[in-house]
Image 1 (cartoon, rainbow, N blue to C red):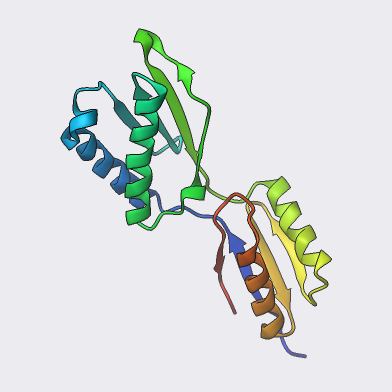
Image 2: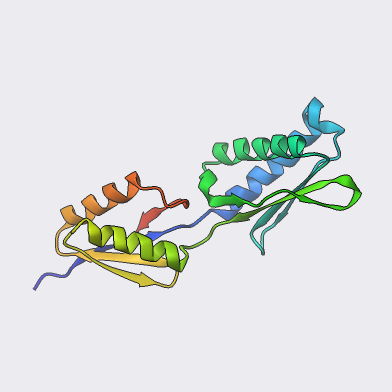
Length: 165
């Protein structure tokens, strides 16, 4: 009997590219005339996978986040990978906005993806394995259809398809 073909659905962000985008953003803040003397700061915590923007107002905070997003796009990091929280007041009249970098697929999103695949009646099996999903089936064409279907959907996180065999 032939072995089933399979692939994994993962959501991974290249932290080195995020760090490079952060470094470019820091340089950009020192060079842009409208942000140079604003007192804005950007901090990146690789361990906690967070980016913190500290700015004097919501408007300036939005400008700093735009600069960061531009650098993330240049580094080919999907903007869905960073989920920004609501701006909060910080000491000294500053505004703090924290962005969390997504790594892995959360259980509720994984269940939703699995449910959507099963609802389309593809001839494949879906297994949730911690922070990824494994899709297997006898025909490669069925797996290709699943990948095409998932690329059309929006789950709020970037999806990659790995270990295709």
